[in-house]
Length: 172
Image 1 (tube, rainbow, N blue to C red):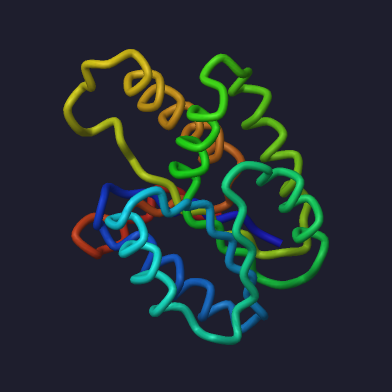
Image 2: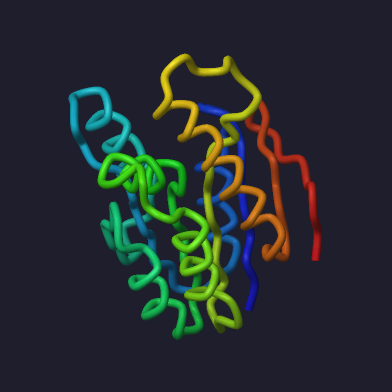
């Protein structure tokens, strides 16, 4: 059906905007959460997102094996909201920073292309900030940038959120 990529910085309003897109689709929604509560601060963020979501949305928690989950879920005509790809990437780096990220990103796209589902992907734009000092954090910024570019190429629509406002970068 369609792929929408919603990108933005931390607390830019991207998740809230993506959730509204899902509601506006008027289709059943499957929410795919990639976050893991490794500390109290992240747990609070997760709870904040949980309380904002409609209770009738299906939920899948998927910190790592996103391509396989999406391959199965994308076969149905409904809306899938993945929040967020940057946390999924972080989980991948934590698991194995030497893996083939290009292959990982390709598998993700293969799982959703030509899908009857309306797919909404949320990702952080991390390349506009301070250049990190450590090797693994620089790798994270590089891979996040590559992931966003890769997805923007295949997405039907790309929206950048700033201060809670959507800016359409690509429209089908």
